[in-house]
Image (cartoon, rainbow, N blue to C red; front, side):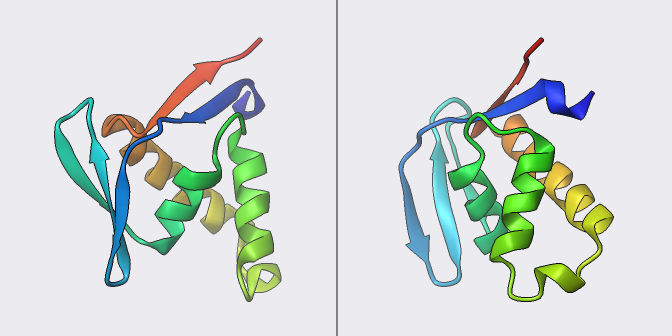
Length: 95
């Protein structure tokens, strides 16, 4: 079922500020602060499902092979849900 939902990045202006990224959500009219991991997810989620995003994240993590994949997936879901709520990511059910 998760494979049927694809995520799409909404192109928004952003800038790096110290260790975070500030992204302007034009839809919500607010600035959203993303940490490195959330920014990576946002920047690389286009046309991918949750499993593809998790696998990509696991590959780029220094100790990805040692991490609990269920924990990564749960954290990804929470980050994606926040970004959907803030208008930075769109989700589409593809059949």
